[in-house]
Structures are given as structure tokens and as C-alpha cells.
Image (cartoon, rainbow, N blue to C red; front, side, top):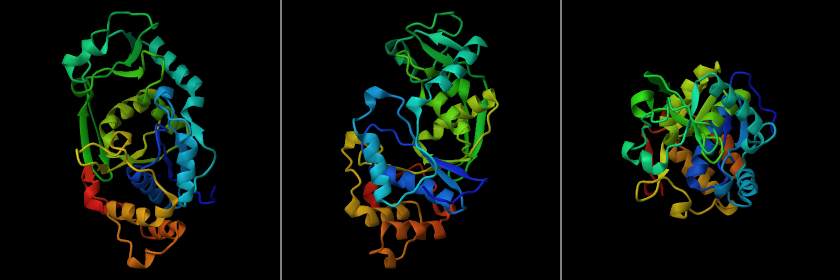
Length: 298
């Protein structure tokens, strides 16, 4: 949808169509958009519709309409994860056949005492894949990377995560597998997203290494949170983005990202605000924190 291209930077925005876009979504979209466009890079659109039971009817169209009404333009065609199942299946089967993944029949109740760290109960059980999740074996290694905002992040996969799910028991593919394959397939060089996904990154680095895929640069922005500390979302009934509030909300989102738009933009069009953001974007000004209460940004 735009002619701006660069072979050295390809970014993306990948919303989940479980509801409308809200202010937290806007901050994430804006950060990824400006980070790409400020260096003449491409910005791709992906719909992470892996989980049909969670998808809200009409949400995909509403998300795209909201982004367009706020002045965003993306390159190329929209990619939907629901149309990529064959690619996921091919890699999953290869990992399973190589002994790098295995079937797990553990129930949620069985795993409750382990507080999210899988203890390897099914690792050597040899279960069949029917009515079972598929888990990836992880090494007893610490993975670390330098995030462009949050700095150095370390995680010991064996002790802090354990073997993780790459296909759910209900047959749906897990986010960790899909996102790694899609980022590589689309040639993504830079991932800009919310800090709630920071602790997923070492798992993705391991998968990239295992599959011989390139590793993107990462930038995790502070999560916009509601009064109880949880991120904005449907449970908080966060209001949807409305077209008549585009300019003030874009300016508010810029300030949340540490940028300093002037008062001359108060009556600007959304496109003019975005153009200002592209010209003045400075990722080093993004607050180096994991979360920002929405109430502080009013």
C-alpha cells in the first residue's frame, strides 16, 4: 500500500482478532510502524488468527479499517496464520520424526503444581500423537539477547520454561511455532512488540537456531496497563479506537513512547501526525520499563 522500501529493514504488525483495537494496540502498531518507516523500511501486516474459538466475528475487518482510518499504510498483502497450517505441519512433523518433539498427554490439573514450568513428565513416555499436545525438547541452556529498549535479557529454558508446546492438544498450532516460521517466511528483520512477549523470545531464539533460521532484532515496548496492573484488553472493556479520536490518540501514543510532539500537531490530520513521527522517531527515548499505567498517560 506504499512505495517505501528498504532491503535492510522489514517490520510487521501482527494483531490477534479476538476483539477490537484499543489504545495499547495503537501504541504497539505505532512503534513498529515508525521504527520501520523512519529508516525507509517495509511494514507488513499479519493476522494472528491461530485460535478460532477466541476470534470475534468481524474483528479482522474492524482492525484493518481502524488502522487505515488512523493513517497507517502497509506493504504487500495481508498474511493470515489460518492459511499457513501446511507450513506449520511440515516443520512440526520433521521435529517429531527427528525426536526433537514428543507427544504429551498431561492435563492442566496435573501441571498445576509446577507453576508453568514443564517438568518433563511425558518426555520419554512414547505417547502417540492422537489426543495429545506436542512439546519441543529444550536444552539445559541459558539463552540471552540484547533488546533495543529493555537491554540484556536472560532465561534458562530448562529451569524457567521446560519443554514447551508447539501444537495444542486440540490440534491448534501454538504461537511460538507459528510466529517463528512466519517471521522467517516474511523475511522479518526487526520485531517491535509489547513487553508481555519478552519472556517468549528465548523460546523463539531456540526454535530459530534449531531450524537454521535468521534471528531478527527485538524491541519490546512498555505494556500499557489498566488499574489492576493487567494489560489493556477485552476483560477491562478497553474502548475501541474511533476515527474521530485519531489525532489525539496518536499524539498520546507518541508521548507514551517517549516522543515529544509539539502543540502545532493538535489539529493535524492522522497522516500528518504519522509523518511527524517518521521524521522525528527516536527509539532511544522509549521508556525502559516493562509497563506504563494508562492513567499516567491521560
